[in-house]
Image 1: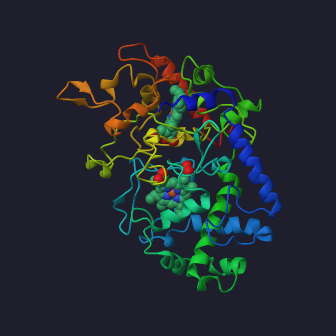
Image 2: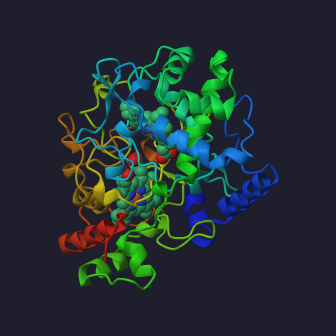
Image 3: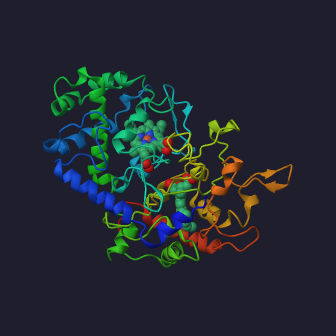
Length: 414
Ligand code: HEC
Ligand code: HEC
């Protein structure tokens, strides 16, 4: 199957479906006194009543987010992999993070930024069939609360033995009394109920705290008329938007959607870019292992959808200038490389993929099994070129585009 449904959806009204969903959620929440957006805040099970304690729950969530004692190593918190200094993304120079009791167990994907996710929705297929939303690179978690379940228990992350193990640590934390005051004196007697409150508090923190959606980049200042781009940055924005140059805005929109106070630089859809296999990821030593995003192995519900293999969620480009590694597998370590890859992937494939000694040809899209390589997007600029053709951007234009991307970092002081 082709990706033409993606292009159709992106052309005319990329945000229509998401906007309707958000409006629906907003109406629902207004009715129930403000729970967590986008679904059941407790991630299954009971939904705590919170109308009167909203701010306090978020403040508790912040403490949990930064508490390293909630890990088997005693050294790892949510903030370890989602560092405010790098836009709540990975602070590491390695492509994946290392967790577990001795912080030596490698992950399989790059920790993404947690900023601007309050504008995301649970996963759905829009009326054109375009996969949209959901949390994680493969959109498998329906809510932020749901998402937070995994890191506490994953062997290569915080690596707690089970839910009771996590809750014993919470009950021993400095904020245990606050936890009881908010959720009931007996809350620790039922570890599963207590764990739901932990996840709920983490979601409230990420949704309510301005830290996660500050809109304070140079781009925002320029949009508000309070700063001006340099000539190079301005050229970069034009290249970013132009359909016959970078065409980046087709998936990373630079205009404000109806549901947010500023541009998000993602439409929360999915695409298959054919990012080269990263041999720095331990799991990739097994030649039969493939991280295929939507069709697995991270999620199982779309395993039958071969046409979705290789698709990962479009990340926001806000704060991308603060990060050290890029793409779901952290394959690249500079923005110049990323942009060069976009425009030269098909015009100069031997520069990006290993050459197969048998045929002397580059093994293109080598991070997908052969039968799924036809899913890779080759119909949309900037990757609708052929081997030997001129790329859409020259080196100077690549530098301009990167200068623009660096204006998307929060905390700009004019
Ligand atoms: C060892 C590093 C590590 C730790 C610790 C960690 N995460 Fe993550 N986080 C990741 C990785 C890797 C992913 C991507 C997972 C995937 O796509 O399968 C991720 C994804 C996420 C996402 C989804 C982001 C998106 O774009 O949809 C959220 C939300 C999140 N983490 C929150 C948390 C919270 C809350 C905690 C603490 C309970 C936490 N993380 C602890 C590495 C980490
Ligand atoms: C057809 C949709 C599409 C277009 C067009 C597109 N991107 Fe992306 N972009 C994605 C997807 C999907 C990912 C994640 C892919 C992955 O990790 O496998 C991504 C990832 C990125 C990342 C990595 C961000 C991170 O957090 O790791 C950067 C940087 C980026 N894009 C910049 C650009 C620029 C610059 C352009 C224009 C030259 C562009 N993109 C055009 C879909 C697109």
